[in-house]
Length: 420
Length: 84
Image 1 (cartoon, rainbow over the protein chains, first blue to last red):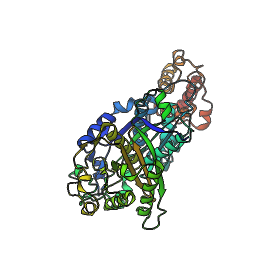
Image 2 (cartoon, rainbow over the protein chains, first blue to last red; image 1 turned 60 degrees about the horizontal axis):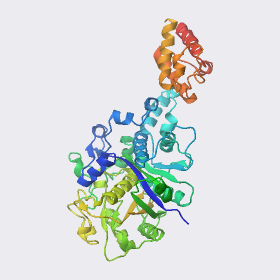
Image 3 (cartoon, each protein chain N blue to C red; image 1 turned 135 degrees about the vertical axis):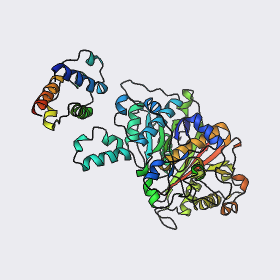
Image 4 (cartoon, helix red, strand yellow; image 1 turned 90 degrees about the horizontal axis):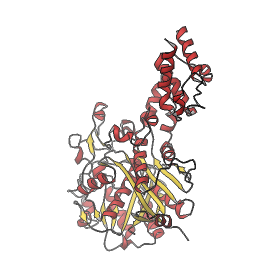
């Protein structure tokens, strides 16, 4: 029989809140984490605002040894290690310094690109003929799997320790990869999550594509407007989210708090065919991904109470809602919300941060309101009832929540959570 | 620069990389970076870079290979300072 998988711990480093308590408070209140970034102004970006977690040096020093802090210049590693370590502790798991690794625990922690600031440092030294001055950590701070490697060493995990990468679906995909490994009986618990570096070298390429809003530099908190008529592009973000997935029996045995069960999900690609491209989703693939997620989770469309969408604040938002409507094909459309109005689009970290936000809503019985969506896009209100798009936080129990993430390369993932 | 000053500077440089604190307590010219202080071998290059910055010298790969103990490091530093 397949193993059941539950969530027993979470950690988050988001632009609008670092740690679970602050993050929950922020999403309950609709607090924005989007700020004006002087550096982007100096570098003549069109979009000079972004979502960047606010971390003090003291906070960072709690998670790294003085030696690890020397020359540490990879924001993705900082965010990922904090979120991952917090999730581990939240699950009531100890960090043991003993000799043997924990063979039953693994890590699947994704990223899009890691350590860009460290890489920039290296490029300057190499170009100046000073390669020998790079120091010993240039490789581990810039290799994609640097994040799972740092966490693996801190937590002492002896099962699979790896990093996945699939653009903005990365975090949700990591969760499903961990889920599958546990259902297959290959691990008892997997720390899943994802992180994304901040800064001009990550965000510049998107600015150059002119898909970021440029008219909100003076009003940053109003810039990210998912599902609104005035959605003008996504605001770039950064951060990390992490969840401890655990075999149900193992969680019960050690009396762990269970946030929710992962019923299942699906991952697919539109093959960059049929309307899909490097940057746009093939709607047929999105619909199939939702349908498959329902089938694998053995639930009907009517059972979904809430959708936490990908919904980045572009004209494609209406298309995503339309895909959900076609896939669910039910009389009553569920409630739907997007975190990105508050955090911006945290890129590779978005899926995991939004999974944490989704599970927090289930745990604390609320549906957070959609921020900056007073002027609902009429293409969306033509599809579904306005009351299903709460603009203010609702207090409501949630039994089943569906979470979607889509990414460049025409890749999709949908996961289904159930309260337990 | 006096021998003692050089040894003190080496001790200060190597401290953050030391995983075996007892090794610092009986720090001498015989102290072996890897065996006694348990400095991660990957971190030896960072120790070299810190030594270069501290004494404003350059330590080539060949000299680095001969730097197993604190005494070796002191001798190389003295040599480089004398030829600078």
